Image (cartoon, rainbow, N blue to C red):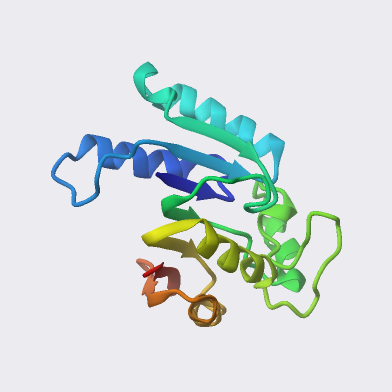
Length: 187
């Protein structure tokens, strides 16, 4: 079971599902179900359109789309949770939109809350501080969390994973050599 939390367009969850399906030699087992979850109804509509375009009819039934603030609306447990949560510090997030990106501020600002309040001193980790312990509760034993972070807060995000009870926590770099992905396993 796979959950793509903060799914946005669904690109991560859909890509993981299709990569596993199209590569039967992979070490991953068959993915039985995929939950694409996001706080934004508009994002989920885009994820649904992408799923409609990319999936064969027999695979569409494996997907669910849930509007939720992190795991608040989810009772299932998972073997793999992928997450690309907002992680940009509040004081930098708005400036990123000046280059014409077509993303809502809520998708970038790691210190914004659903109620419109902001943790100005959160360093981009406010959402991640809530996500990590919630993901730990929703992972099955032996499950893995894969979470994108900023190069400036990836080590702190890894520390949050360790504090939540994850073991075998690693930080991986992206193709530019920047710290980018936190991998954490639940024993």
